Length: 142
Image (cartoon, rainbow, N blue to C red; front, side):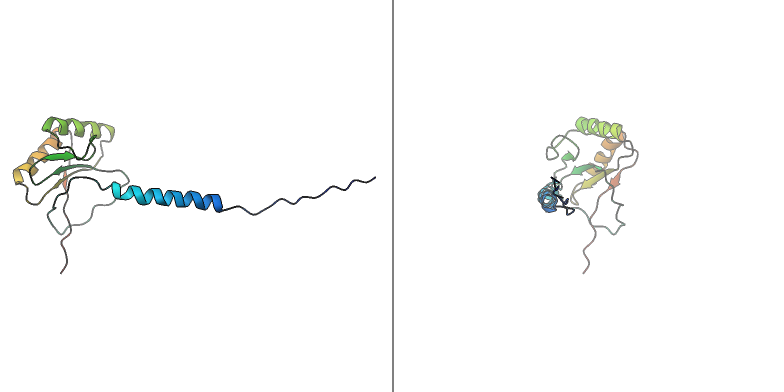
């Protein structure tokens, strides 16, 4: 009695459905989280013609000065909570200790007193920032 073995062929096709499901799930997650990344204090930035900064993977340290002269630090526990001078200096020191090359920027409302902007820059320098940049908007073209 000769036994015949049943030859089973392996399936050489790849089932793509699970991969498509994962990709669609990631797409939904990114669509939800990207708008939440732009949280912060609303300020009306001054307009100036300048070159755009190169985009980097790391988030810069941004000190925001609102129209009332209150200070907000984007890398603090609550970016929407106004901070006093000591908290800003301590937060700047901590951020620059982790990454000494971290870009440091001041984002101020166009109606803020010049002294408040200078005060923000001084606080950042007391925290260890060697260079401080200013954030502006591009002017609207007619």
